Length: 150
DNA sequence: TACGGAATGA
DNA sequence: TCATTCCGTA
Image 1: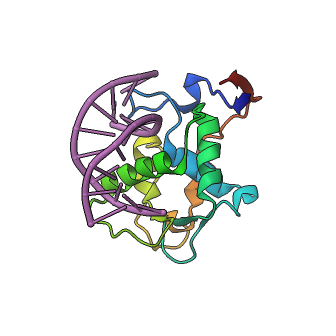
Image 2: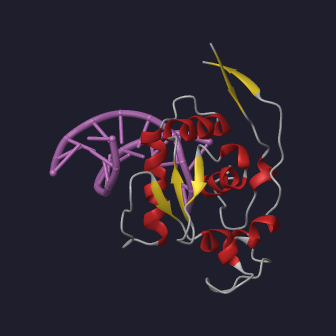
């Protein structure tokens, strides 16, 4: 059985603030999915709260994440553990919301990686409240799937 | 099923 | 550091 996954070159996600890992980071991957219409049935922004999104198809998100990281054994149990670490990291006191609903402050995540993007507080028109920064993020290159035996 | 500690990896 | 893996607990 072949496991199809994507391999990305190191430079694709090279950032200043992550000296150890040069791999794609989970928050970036989540953002990528959220930006694309085709994944609207898998993961989508929640109306209202800033930075809040729902995972509608946990298994599919895990599958896509595993494919991207070349981790055939990835599942939602492991993915959600990583998400919980992210939530703790930015707001330890955050209420665990509804099932499959997460709220990230993407400003805080984007800022250290892309300091050239001007950031203002939430709620003001024409700023991050509308996720205008998404168009400023580096475009993620696409590659042909790499076939890996398992 | 979801949470989170602990060990380990790259 | 940021996940990944495993697993005990509720």
